[in-house]
Image (cartoon, rainbow, N blue to C red):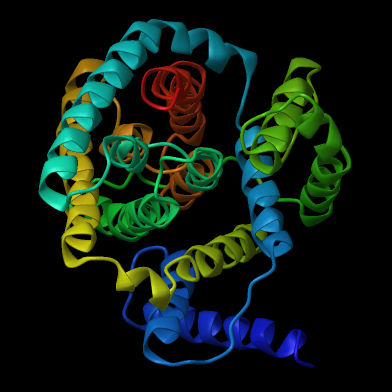
Length: 340
């Protein structure tokens, strides 16, 4: 019971949050309701709460399966027209984050290596692991910055997109098949060791995406995923994100706390402006452009894209490009220049 009770608490709190967000017609109630319900409960009350990583991974595989059903080789070929833009975009964001890190170093009085690692808009878990491997980086500061950024991105972007009235209309693509969706999800779990062997970033998410792409190449007809499964995925991931901000994280110096919040808001604002420009440059809807440029995780942005009816394939490609750009180019340079 000691093991099960904290998990049950999270489930109850998450469902209550979902119910409240449904009643007030809030956007993405299954994800945001569970996220904020768990977050505020954890910060306000000392209840034992736990969410096994397997629950988050289940959500990731479901989302990856949903997006994989949309992927085709033709979509990948069509994206070649935006490759140069994606490169320029990531270089510009890296320069902005470099300037932001130098400002944080001076204002919050934290080491430059810590400020740089905290400012890079990469995946939360990967950058925390990177920080733990270096002796000169304050892991607590890096963790706080990235948790705050994830909370702001996941919590605010659906609201911003919904309140601007720029959510694309839902397109009916056919009838969902629950059995087929469950079989594809099971296939994703079965082939997960292959994805890990290939060292895919966020393998629980990308493995089913690649499976969907491969199935489209051999002309296998796939029905859209069942909405109830997507609701489960949103709850699983929302509850996980809600538990990321521990009360202990708020014991950092006040300037560090303000710096983390300010950097998240600045990144959201800058990517908002870029997204508005992309609407005119590439004639795409705002939801897709904002989720493509937002400094969130590839899996989180893909999940929001499916919920908001944005182009989840394009969002995933943009986010994957940024992740590879950071891990192949930025982090090796950071390690070589600052941490040798």
